[in-house]
Length: 371
Image (cartoon, rainbow, N blue to C red; front, side, top):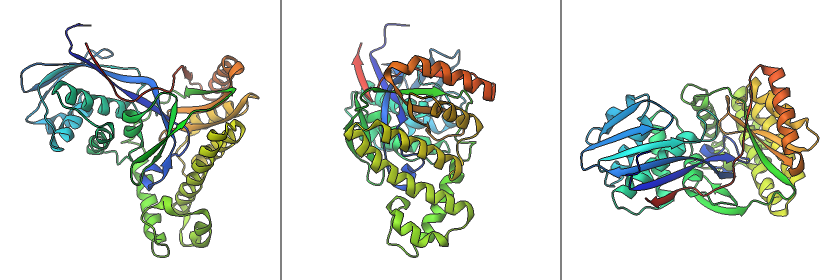
């Protein structure tokens, strides 16, 4: 690597412990930032161009800071282009620079590689222009960049990527973007992340369709309840009015209401160090995502089933938007290696795919280092 870069800026991938597909419904989610990250080496270049290279790709891209919209069409560089565009539109200075991107968050894994790229790009642009920034503001602008590329996402991924803290999960209220840090107390258990290795693409998946379905449910329930978002519907109120919802619209709403309740119970379980309860909640979450929200697919179902059948696993669920990606499992510390071997063998027999296990720590979000 050329050692003449001025700064090294990172942003984290994330794992969501529980609280899936409720961030865009105004719910509370429970993610943590990972040591898998996107690193940007950056230096000013005195031009009106942003030159981008990658450690993992032979491609190069050049963005014109006066016409960043054009970068939306790029196969590689589109996330950086929209991040720069939205940062500039928010009133910040965008200067010409050279960037080298090094991403250890696996693409299509459901661990938010796109959020890590957006957040680190914005933080790098601010840093190289000599501008201070608030991680929360970076997250909100990174969300706009992702939406500009066609994914009508909630705030969870970008917030976790920007604002993560080593050793803590984030109880993030997506309705007002406020966060409470909860120490990760897993006692005798480890968090194990396994990728089913079936790539997904959110723009082409049913993500936006699910969001539209939850919005339809909200519209109907608003006729009976004084609510601003679906996450405000309690389990009792839902029982009173669920008859108004039909078919898939009912199922999507039922998942959101029950998942919001599970997040509250998961926070209590984490604070109490009750990993058996947290594990049961993970299992319930996966079942709801499979049966009611229909975002798992046979690979994730096979992976979660294999994990759940191991005697030293307290619970396992898909994490992320689904349609491929990863599971998160709670496993007795002494049994982790046996668990990985057992799950991977069972999964391969069931699907023909080879799963991949990640060794990742719970880490900080944005970091900036002067080189």
